Length: 366
Image 1 (cartoon, rainbow, N blue to C red):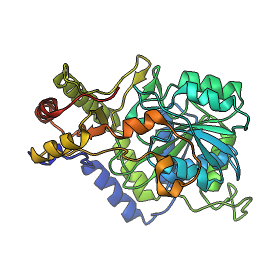
Image 2 (cartoon, helix red, strand yellow):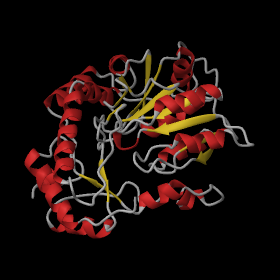
Image 3 (cartoon, helix red, strand yellow):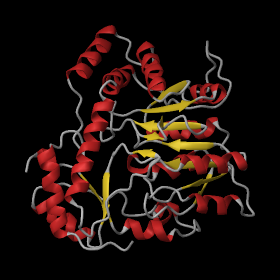
């Protein structure tokens, strides 16, 4: 097998390189017109009124949480089954992560668990829903709960560029959304992030926070902030990548269809795509009872794979303490395995991966 079977394979292309060269030759390397153009184009893509570029996905989420009013002591409901940055950003904003369990079919937040926490004795100040692996969380039910309890709903769309909920792009369905442009994501800027929202006040607050709390003009710093700005080089790459994003996502979806067809009838649990969702397949993640053995067998046949995520956030050493339990998320973490689905995976390679997996997999504990 070739590098096509690696778990990720970022593709930049000549257009991105040319745009970066133009920026380098312009001499305006930091925050500037190129960043403003990327913000505008990305907002349009997400059908959002505003977008604010940042240095990475974690800073985007941190700034968004600050912008919606998360402060020291704020209790924020989120999922334990995500990359640790989701909960870290809550803590960096001074908040306290409160973990709800996940749905066993979608691996996203279980609205019933969220509602139970909202009905509890301790107040909740925000909800962070992760669109895990590129599959939109159940934004209808979560939105209803957020409205009923008058708390902001934050979308962590770090893995969901190009995903849709009921035909609406993720990122501006809740109060605010955030994206990551890390190299393995569906589109990249090398490192970078983006905040999207229809709320002008939230957008303005986020813009100040990522620029040292600076007012729109001059050197008046009206609040404490950070330097979370995006560079013009990153924005140049992002603008080129955004023009290719729909094609990237469609290739991922086609590879996912091939994998699902190859695994039909096997004991492997393939990804769910509810009727409300357009899955962007940042990861094609299956569940199998002998996950570690399957991973080793794939590697022996030249197929890369990865476990996202082997340890729930509440079980991480940095989260020692009473963060509760999440039985479904804990069981899933022992069984998930992500397969190559990126645009450089050919249909033939996707079919081969599916055939190899079907020969090796054992029943997952559904």
